[in-house]
Length: 317
Image (cartoon, one colour):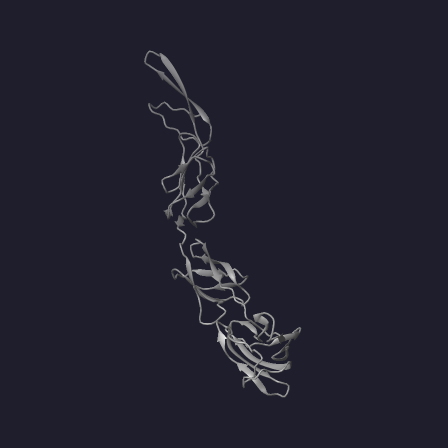
């Protein structure tokens, strides 16, 4: 609606629209010519975006949310040499570093805006920690283990020992149950301050262990196989053992404390301390024993949870 007679006009437009500008040139002879061109006033766009986590571990994907106003063309610069023209891109960082992300915005080919997020994206590598384990072998059964990490840092360590229990700390001690044997998968979880959590798994194998002492109730020194010709208790993992045999008058006729590889080393052949064969009949045995685990032998089980360390045996001729 405004006009000017200046050689080069100037006008300030206040609304967004397409304005047809008409220039009429007239010479002194009143000859004229008219030229019409359209000039469009566009709204300046506002570039803005957001993302959630600003730190992570390789490889790390960041999802960007575009909340710009008035944009139709987008160019993203992720700071690591890569870019995208998507409206809401996702980008995977594959190299550790600190990155500043910029969005360049255009509604067309004229007006533009850009926004560099003030919060940088920090990408770290995961820690490559492992652990070692040492089986303590100073006392049977071998069920005590020390676990140590390969490096000591101010991280939070959580251990899962494969038997349903957990431990904590850079190094930790664990005692498996006596009944446990075989191999267990041990997992070390590492929680770091930069959220580069990691884990490491390894297996530990525990040797089998069984302890016990069984006392027979009869033997035949004059006939039968070699095994039944002597009275010999059967035991494993014994570290101390003392057996005494008495006749019905309470006289000691034989005793032994010999062990071989954790088992009783000798048996009674039915001959007394003077070398005289004992007559057939009932005799009394008395045993005290302990195992390599440090436990004392409870005795033979007569009934459920009823044990005895003295009993009778029959010498059959």
